[in-house]
Image 1 (cartoon, rainbow, N blue to C red):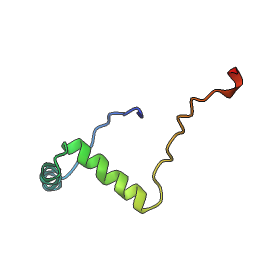
Image 2: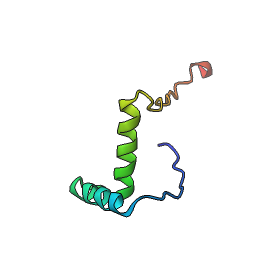
Image 3: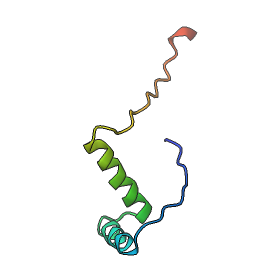
Length: 62
């Protein structure tokens, strides 16, 4: 699982209320909804981070 970094976000009150409502409708936390929205935007623009390979096969140790 990737590390998460905290940071402050200033957001318009009406926008935050709309995101909170959407999060509630989707059974997510507000933070989880914002992460979901950001990832969708990254995917839509082909800028999503590449998944790291978790290849733990160490063939040199045989």
